[in-house]
Image 1 (tube, rainbow, N blue to C red):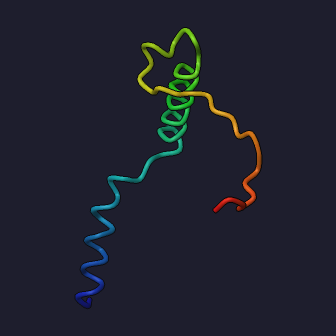
Image 2: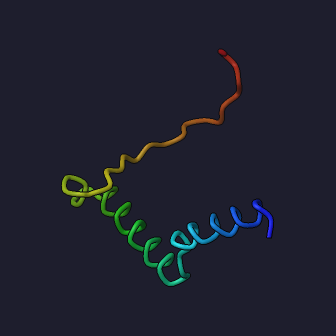
Length: 66
């Protein structure tokens, strides 16, 4: 086994801790969605962990005025 192969195996081993199962990824996604909804709601915004402010795009960028 070459030095490159040994280093690659070591990196792969270290990265395994960052691999998320589908179940955990769905749970994180659902929690984030709920936090954003709470942050956007008038009632939940003051105490929300994720502060969101509704903003609207009024027009498409044209590149003029640059």
